[in-house]
Amino acid sequence: MARFTTLYSGSSGNCALFEEDGRALLIDMGRSARSTKTALASLGVEPDALGGILVTHEHSDHVAGLNVFLKHHRVPVYASERTLAELTRQNLVPETAALIPIDGETVDIAGFGVSAFPTSHDAVDCHGFRIESAKGRTLAIATDLGYVSDEVMANLYLADVVALESNYDVNMLMTGKYPYFLKRRIASKNGHLCNEESAAAVTKLVTSGCNRVHLCHLSKENNLPELAMQSVRVAMLEAGVVPDSDCVVRAAERFDISPVWFL
Ligand SMILES: [Zn+2]
Ligand SMILES: [Zn+2]
Image (cartoon, rainbow, N blue to C red; front, side, top):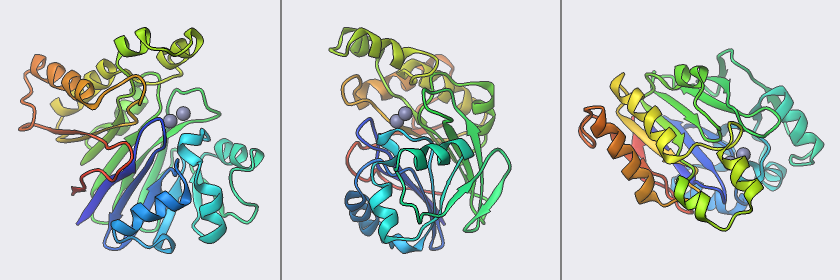
């Protein structure tokens, strides 16, 4: 049986785990190595047993723990060629780190078939990942994107679990304390998904067969789990989908391990 969860999720740090039969991959490590290892320990995963760490992009909420972690554990890092170059340029990984480029081609990483797909975000070369386990269970994860492109949608379709960001509530962002330039950046095509955009994508996925959705990367300042969940419920009901029956949706925990999806 495969399992998926986030160790923590949100603007203060992101990290997800996909595991099957003792083989495991992490996606990002945006809090300290220590917090990440504590979370891994409570899931019964040894750091040295990780088959790889997939990195979506170089922003600190995705890589903050990498440098220290990689100094103690020789786990290979997979990301796009340009993201790896940026991690090196910014000294976000130790010189000894094993850095392996991946792209849209499916490659085998510790028994998982992994492919990367581009997302529109203000990073050097941001990507999401589609990961298939040896037993054919599929995770699709996209956490930093200003809009859901056709290519992103194609990669999210027919996954056993979809992890999609639901970053901000439009009203909270626009009436909140962020400076105007930052509000514009977040709401731009190179920023993040608002709850309604995420809910629209989720509803399309559910009508084509997806029945497990993990809403992630919720903003601490500009969102609440209840608002993200409510947006999805409203969009589903409008599309004739029965929430909790046709599809189970959860909002990820910010600082804790979220309930595990068993696939
Ligand atoms: Zn980012
Ligand atoms: Zn982020």
